[in-house]
Each structure stands twice: as C-alpha cells, then as structure tokens.
Length: 622
Image 1 (tube, rainbow, N blue to C red):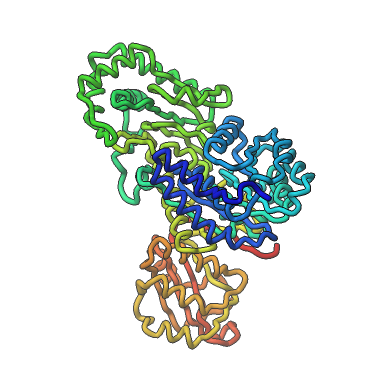
Image 2 (image 1 turned 30 degrees about the vertical axis):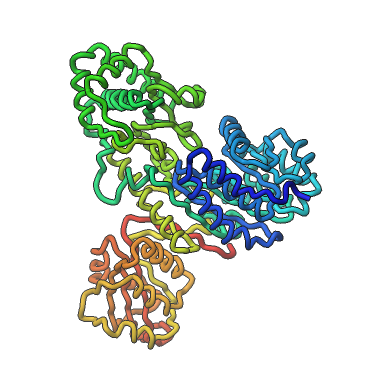
C-alpha cells in the first residue's frame, strides 16, 4: 500500500504556500494544477506515452506551477516523477533543495540516490531531480530499466527548459543526439509516461513533428501574476516606453548607466531594500567582458573625482527621472549622501560571470552590483531587484528563443518606476518583434488552436536550425505570390455564389479574413500548394485579431494556359503587392480552354503580409 492513503499532495503544498503569505501565488498554482489535472492527467490511459507543454512567461514563476502539477498528478495516481533541470550543478542542487523544502510526503532523490529510490519501492511517490547531462541520464536510464517495479508503473517527467537540450540536434543526420536518446530510454523503461515540457520559449517545441515524439499533444498557458513585468511592459505594441533608452542617442552610455544605477541603488537601499542589480550583456566574448568591467571602474573613478561637481549634477538629473512605486521617494540630499557613501566606501561590486569566472548567487544578493556576462546570464539565472540593463549583444543570425531567454529584466521584484533598459534601437525592434510573436503564440493557445503557427521578420530565426527537421518544417515567405498549378474546386457553383457580390469592375475589396477562409475551403489544392498552412496562418492572425481584415481581388473569364509562369496579370500583381500588411487573395476564374480539365475553375493566388517568414510543420512521410 502506498504511503498515507489520506495524503492530499496538492492541498498540502498549497497550504504551505499560503502559510508563507503567498495567497495569490497559491490561487494561481491551484488554478493551473486543477485545470491541467482535470483536462489532461485525469484522462491519461496509463498505457501510453504522451507529451504535453506547460508554457509560461520567462521568470514568471514556472517552478511553483510545476510543483503544483506534480502534486496533482500524485493525487491522481502517478508514483514516480523525474524533474529535469539544465546541465548546471548549482541549478540542479537549488532545485533539489527547493523540492525538499516545498514538497511533503514524497521520497526525494538526488542524482546519487539510486539506493534510496530502490529502498522506498514506491511506498511514497518518488521525485528524482536530475540535470540534463549525458552521464547522469544514462545512469538513471539503466536504474529504471533494471528496477522491476518501473515496468508496471507510469512515469511523470517534468522537463524544465525543455527546448534547451532535450530535442534531437542530429535530426537532419538521421541520428539521435545523446541526451535525446537517454530521455527516450527513461520514458520507455516505464509501462507508460506523461512527459511535461516546460518553457517560456516554446518556438522549438512547436516546430517538432508529431512523429518525432517531441511535439506536445496538449499545451497549457498560465498567466503571470499582477506584479509581473514582462514583454508588454518593455515592448508595447506602439511607441517606446519611458523605461527604455536608446544607447545610440547617448554620448557616454556607460557613464549614464553607472550614475543611473547608483541613483536607483541609493533609493532602494535607503528604503529597506537589500539589493540593487545592474546587468551588462555586451557579447559572448570574455575579453569584451573584461573591457566593460574596466570601463565601469573608470566611470566609478570619474564619479569619485567629480563627486561634488558633474557627478552631483548627473545624480540630480537622473533623480528627477525616477518615480519609485514600491517605496516613498527619499529627499535628494539624503539620496546624494547615500550615493557618496556607496562610492567612497568601495562597496560597489563589479562581477564578471562567464566560463572563466564563477560567481556565487550570494555575491549579487545584497548591495549595489554591476554584473557583466554573456551566455551565463541566460536560462535559470535569476537576478533579484534587477533594475538597470545594458544590452548591446548582436548576432549575424539572431534566434528568437535565445534572445528572449536573455531578457533577465522580466520578473516580479522590479520597481516599474525605476526600471531602465539601455539598448540599441535595432535590437529593441527585434525584441518587440519577438514579443509580438509570443503574444500570437499565447493567443493561439488560449483559443485552443492545436497547430500553433510561428512567424518572424526576415532575418530572425525562431530557434537553432539543427533541431528543425528540414524535411518537415516548411517556410512560407510573406510578400510572395503562391498559387496551385493543378487545382480543383469541390463546387464551382458554391464559389460562384460566395463571390457573386464581388464585381470584376472593382479593383479590390476589403473583407473579413473569415470570408477568405470560406472561399479557400472550396479549393482542392495540388501538392505544390500548402493550403492547410495558409489556412493556419489566417487562423493565427484571427487568434490575435478576431475581426482581422484581408484584401480580395475577383477576376472572371481569364483565358490563361495551365502550368505556365505567373498566374496574375502585371496590373493585379502590382495591385496585390501594394498591400504589404494584409493577406491578399486573388481569385481568377479561368475559361478552361487552355487546360484546367476544360472547366471554368476558380484558381486562388494568396500573398501573406510582407517581410515575414511563417514556419509550418508538415506531418507525413518523407
């Protein structure tokens, strides 16, 4: 018999969160856990291997939601949980400690606790916290395979940052990367499994094929809490917010950032705050990090040398610009004295985080700090009270998911009235585009669209190319005219009826995208025309804009030969091309005298909004 039969794991966990004073968090976790549990876990067959996705904003509290779902799954009969972290010793240890402090009634195992796992023999439900490391996964694949009771029991795997290392990086070489292979082996060692992918950047996950075994059967998005500052705060649909400053417009950007951060730190530390962090993210190169550290030090020295002159004037200017919302704004004279104290006491820390320099969390958990780094500033690293960000990292082939994971400015413990992001204008535009697509993904998930579509401007890739199956990921290019060479209509009469109100004499009509979908539903495409993909793109737009509009051109009696060059006349090609931000559907009815099975068929020509690449997963055989 398993443990205390009256143990209610989810209730126990929520009570613990509530007792700590986090009532809103407990409510959010309860909502996520009950909905995921009742929609997906309750219906689990306990005889299959299924995969799902828990999707939340970057740094919006995914860990608590994951723990809640695990507790709900334990309540519903899952006896073994594997919780995967990125391949980082500190992160795995942090996660293990948090599991031990937050979850009660489980047998909790680290990577070296195989004996404890076997001895427990599922008397209590087990949670094993592993990092995604080939050696560790291989070891536990063998342990599960050799443990008799796993052959008859279901396994629940929670893969945090599932898009980071779990996917097959050798998919285009018809081989399986090691981590992907051992995760498969862990799944298959059990009688059945539910594999929950968790990430704030699901682009790569959505672009996996179903046949690969890594495309989610279901997706659940959880809303961030009220105090969260995320993409829409920093990258709104229109205009640049006051919390963003373009580096391109500043004559001495490093000096500006240093003085700004000293102002904000003084305000926070004078208001019972413990820490204030500033992040410099200039490049992946170690020598650049050293150079930036030198520049920060030089500017701090300048501040000391000019403490009662230009520095004081700079402090006064930036003091006027802050509007703290989490504390009362201190008097200028008091703040200036604190700023002087920080400078003259030598207590301001400059920390470099990269492959050469390991920095403990404790070093940026108190005081006024400047943190400099590259890749190490990405996934899993959380900076408390991060108020100032200097981001100038560029890439020849930028990837949306990697860039978004660098957005360490997101979180709950930021004061919106004192946030400032220093960034180049072109990089800000890229982030705004990524945020727009994130909002599109969220809208599609919330509207229950299964085949989530992803699109980005030309030059911005959704994710790294080595995990996308070239045979199955189709890219539709906005601004390009697409039409089928060998189409058919399921009913010419039905299309005639739909298009009857639209005269040839009108150059074009603005119509609902839903009407365009209705027209296209009567087209039987040839294999060269990905009709489903175009319909999915229209669904994507409608998820964000329920009243979305498109452009319709209707032309009858076109005497065009089948299988030759362009379908459109030069005039119609130019007219359609003039609408750069809308879906344009041109419907030509051919006379049928030059092919087309001698029928007066309707031929569609579709053009998607310009300068955008739409990614679509095509299932089926190679």
